[in-house]
Image 1 (cartoon, rainbow, N blue to C red):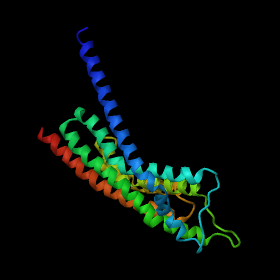
Image 2 (cartoon, rainbow, N blue to C red):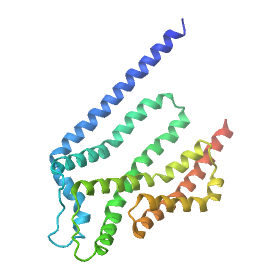
Image 3 (cartoon, rainbow, N blue to C red):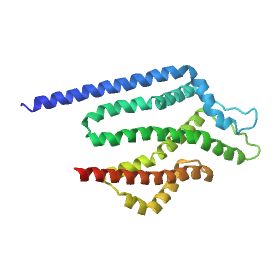
Image 4 (cartoon, rainbow, N blue to C red):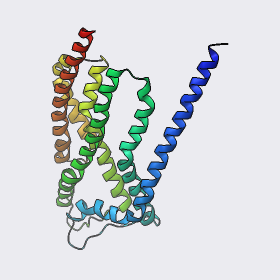
Length: 249
């Protein structure tokens, strides 16, 4: 009976803190979304630039569904709000988990969280500024004669968001490599030996999640291979530091 009381109180305290963290994260996301909502149409116009720049002069996107001119910009505003609020959302998750971590785990987790956010942003920027213009240039060139390329605004948004998520997630390769090494699942030496299989896997993933053209596949596969090598370097450094820390104890 004496142990159940403190345990239940501790569990209740954790649940209360979790609710508070989730509430703060939700409020922050809502505030950013409301701030972006008046600029939803401008955000969509900015997002459509890579496609409109490759279409013939005077071309426009079309709205097939009746309500899509209203809901599509709102959907984009929510996604943009989620992207902008992501650092604060991750901070709330970190503040909830951090008290249960050891000091060396905190030292390793902080840079990994920062790297996760920055690499995801870098992947989205890479997709917008480099991949999308090249993809739409390719698609506009292969459009048959007599066919007008008129894209629905909702389908276009879905296409771009999928590419953003794909490239953002793919740019997390260094973080994934370091985490695998830290968890002891693999060693840096095993990752180097498996480099050939990893390259094949990267090209398979690139072929699945990119449009069906060689340009976009290469533009995803090549950065992923470079990031994998960066992850190997970081994993070796982390492994050496962990070994030195364990030896000093």
